[in-house]
Image 1 (tube, helix red, strand yellow):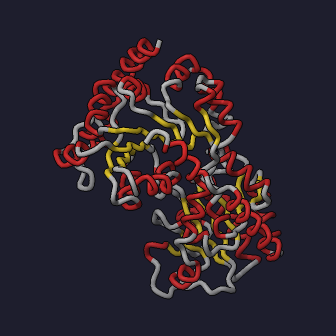
Image 2 (cartoon, rainbow, N blue to C red):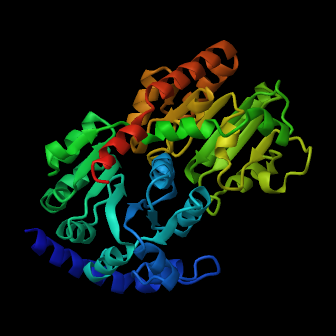
Image 3 (cartoon, rainbow, N blue to C red):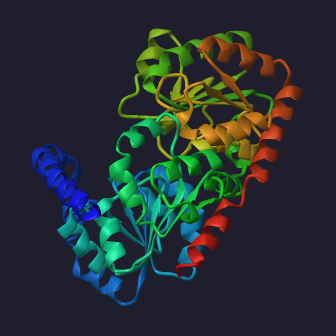
Length: 424
């Protein structure tokens, strides 16, 4: 049945690529930074890359997004000490981050999962092990690797309760290809049970926890909060509230809460970090409310502010390190939430909304450990923030519990490495 499913899958995928190519071209066409983008997506590599890859067998790691790459960055770093690592990504933004975080590796765009294209990619990349991050199921890649006896391991697997019914609808198809994985590591028992029910072989599935705890811990050791306060000229006595990864649908409410907090705590500092800088409407919202703000990119040396909008990427953890309270966004609108672990690495209390399915397990652990507060509305968020601002000892205790919870849940990277070592 695998071969039949693969034939129809490739037929449909080819049709989709042909129909959508004019629209996709805008995203993959050559530019100054990535002139070979579209070629790599069809497994056409330059002579230098081919020469480098052919010298010895490689470990191929595929991550789709920035978040996925960052979540396994400690794993990639450890593997890179002994192995030639090739990292493939789906987006230009993700590729750029990977090159800055892992400069010693080989970085490519993930090829289209058409059988002829993927066959050429596997031949050129020359892997002895393929690692797929989270729940990425690429039928052509899996079948080719299986036929060539190249082990494929899915790591840091997750299947949320909300996405599970969608997978179940295609269990007949998904299950056929799950059986081609050599091993699967999942974050928790519930997700392990879900992937087994979809067709994964029980003896191949292991529970290892979430590597995001390891990543947050390692990241926190590279940031000095005193230096961050010094750079932004924020005295120790000023309370800092961070609204991180804010979705556009949350911005109006965040501005309203900020206005209320500043009215009650006149010396407070509000840091707003939009999730999508190209879609944000926060500047218009703040201006409409006559709220004075500064943009991080145009901040003058020694300039003071009550509201700072962070209009650059990759800065959020610097502000988590110095805050008194942190709200992690995309969680009070039906988006599914962003990573709630990072503030706990700095012993900060974290607030998270009820729409948290993307990080359901991580959030459950933090909340049950006493390091986070779940809110079901912006009114509730405002009320809880005021409660902790008026009770600094309670805020400190909440942050301490969050940090202890983080420490208790590190180690997933080592457990994943132990699984991978069986195939190296």
